[in-house]
Length: 339
View 1: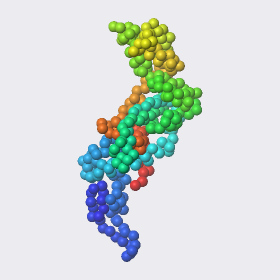
View 2 (view 1 turned 90 degrees about the vertical axis):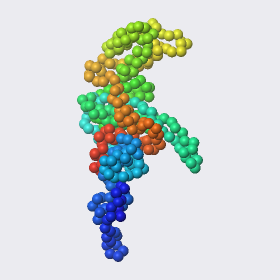
View 3 (view 1 turned 45 degrees about the horizontal axis):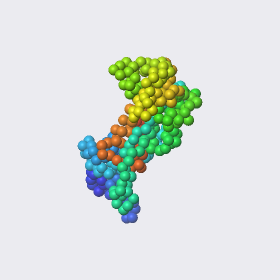
View 4 (view 1 turned 30 degrees about the vertical axis):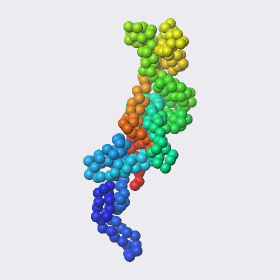
């Protein structure tokens, strides 16, 4: 008897001689092991497990293929191949050299559970949030980004960011255009990796949020008109009059809320990263919509399901699986994968 998923098949067993090895013609022809999972079945399980919770994925396999497998089987193979898929980035070279590469980096919080230390590890478990750092890069004339993600340190994220940009075509002569929010660690890592060959631009939407909050104090009743005027000045690289206007309405130092002072400080600390005029002239993005979209479809869509908490080891495997699928490495991986 052989089992394919939960389908039981009666097969003929042959033996070479009285004590020779057993021959299983059905298993050899179907490329399965007794009570095992064929490569084709593994691919199906990983495909469903990468997109939804493991128990519903098992039900979908039964619905679409008539094969009943336990949720634990979906989980096992999804995480196992997730680990293997993490190595794809190491084997992948750049698509082609690019004159300009657009790249972004941001962090996204994901749920993690740390088990207890006693005999029953369910007791004393801790639920917390870890930051998954996601980066993306693409040639300026391409619409297909390459993603990278890690749960590691800022240093690990920095190395991954550079490697991801290189996969997108960045080299010594490439101009690198970075865009994102003003988080200091992101700006610092951009300077470390690309400072000599590009420039970092603060996401225009983030700047506009600060201006929108200040508008209620600076121009009550005409908030939208005032905000749009300041946005126009920033787009023309005229930050000085924006700051002068804000300085006239600064709140007292002891005020509980200081939206005007916050906006002024945010701009002053990032003046070297507000060159919107040059970016627009070169038809480069001034917003970080790509990385925000990446958070949703690469990370959050699967890793932040309602009620789902991950161990760090399993979270890393699933994160790399999601990145590999987003990078279209799926088919190449299964062509080289073995049972």
